[in-house]
Length: 273
Image 1 (spheres, rainbow, N blue to C red):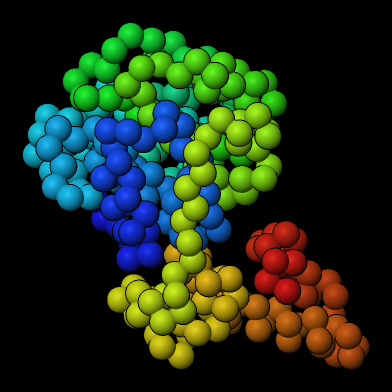
Image 2 (image 1 turned 45 degrees about the vertical axis):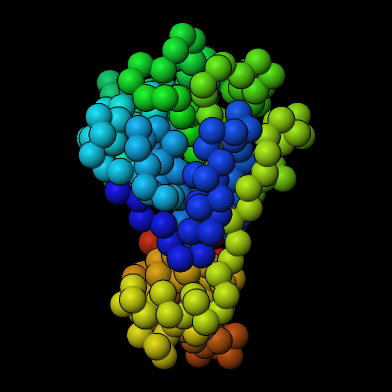
């Protein structure tokens, strides 16, 4: 049931081994592209499992079966509506229970975790776990909490319910309120060793001649390197650089070049450069 990435497995082993004595709130942080979203869901399932095997959930108990189906009542996920509606997968299935905007609304889905979502989470935290030994609440990414939502979450951190684990996941932990950071035990997911990352990229289907430059551009984060490979990052970046060089020498037409790259968006193009 659990699929630990090689560089996250040592952290997973430590946390699952300590599951009876884990702090009530963990701040799981690290660079984008390390697999934190997958990690936190696998960790949640291992914490809820009735009979984990080592660092893995058993996959067969009642809690595991409900978790795999996206219906375990003791697993809660808050994330921005925009993310829930854009991404598929187990995390988004659980997060759909806390959608802040109704389907009838024509407004753009929210890019933040709203205060009403946190208030609903606080209500859900009352009482005892329904089927598992504990209850797990995931916030992904925690820096998406707006100001009011962050202040509301403090109430849950200051007076944590019994038998509840709060797992805050962050790509940019320093953006969180100091009062939130101070009430969580920090768990850093490290970048893999260079050789380990290259070996994993090979298993992910990234050709050897692309893996090295993509990993460098991704800051050593393997999942980001895979995303770059799938979107043709190297080719797009080279094409943009050629067009801008042509403009600099007067050989290109600004209107034509702008039309060619407009669909990619200004921020994305700046990121490539």
